[in-house]
Amino acid sequence: MYETFARLMEERHLTPYKIAKETGISQSTLSDWKCGKSCPKIDKLQALADFFGVPLSVLTGECHCSAPEGGLAFGTLEYALYGEARLLDEEEKQQLLELARLLRRKKKL
Image (cartoon, rainbow, N blue to C red; front, side):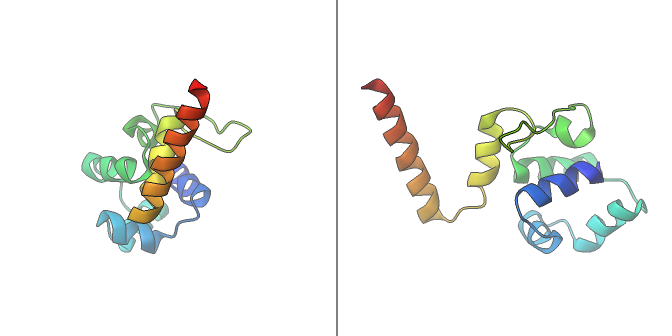
């Protein structure tokens, strides 16, 4: 599990501190998982899955998705977009929404 967690952190350029702050999972708990001192409970895994915008199965090891050449990983493009959008501030989220709508309108032309 920790390998997948570490890969998600790296792909999104996040630190354990940032994840602890955003999820409420302490840095010491994350460190215990890394060292194998404890195993995460399902509620903590779900919190991480929600934070990263990936299915729980990615963190539990039930999904063995690999990153495509474009760099997006773990499931569908929608999950990747959700995970990235969660890290944006409100103004950036609004800009992303406007861009998506512009692309959709452009496609209709």
